[in-house]
Length: 387
Image (cartoon, rainbow, N blue to C red; front, side, top):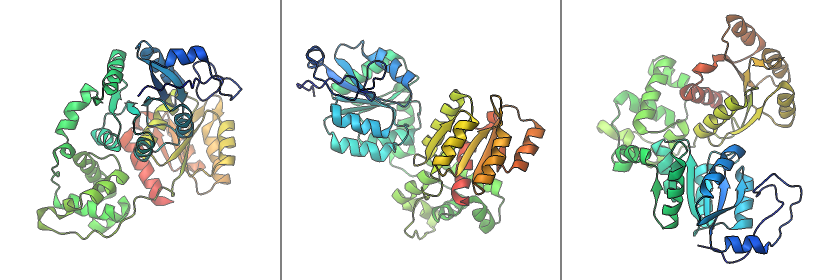
């Protein structure tokens, strides 16, 4: 729907088509009104200014749309939606202070006529289906050509649904899309039943007489079979499909179950002098556990300042922070926050670094090249159950 009332915003740092200004006043601009009244008004939401700039440049070549605002996190997005009432929302849902599924459902209910196009780097079919089910009009992968983004916008304006072509085969072949349930072994069902009760890996292993590593391997295969990414998603899946634990003739009674407590590990601090690495780690953590609040620090001084204002319970700390010593920071941190779990990370897995880091109080020492999604998930799951 095209708006016919002038609502151009100028000099507002939340919604700007140039450098941020200091004033937060709204002005009616006749020229901008004439420019926008016959175009579909677009709001961009992404937590990285460079990405927003690239998307803006790409879509403003499309004559039928104009970008009227930008947002960088959940609160600024909600404020922008209320102030601008855009026709189209282009959003990367992995922003700070934004829980993807519940927030999208709320936005859809509040702005039923607005088109919503998710632009994301994640191609997991469960994640995509969850957002489509929450009410988005399309899902576009960031690694696709910019021309496709313009086409996606045109399609959703026309009332169609857009899904990037690499996702289609995955969605069609997913057991979730077929309505059938995946088959699990009796051992996998035993593990799932205990996971559903909220048991951590070590307790499950003790109960079943297996090693913790064996339980981890089983869970990896279970996650892959169910097309889920974490314990939290697994519990949600079991709530929706309780019959899966009764396969093979065995009935498992499922008592009311709470999800993994989001309050146990509520704040995570990433301390690394490489902004690109922090960016990747930040996005991975918030994707795996959307309820976690993740902050970043590029130096010891920034980390100390952040720790003074927020009760972080999990830290990822690089051993080498420019000219600063991450291990020395760990010692200081453990004196101030004895219960904090600190994961030391390094691109230089020197044995002496490893020894000193653990002696300083770090929970673990991990080579950065081994810090993949599964490792990060395990760290977070263990932290959730240990605090």
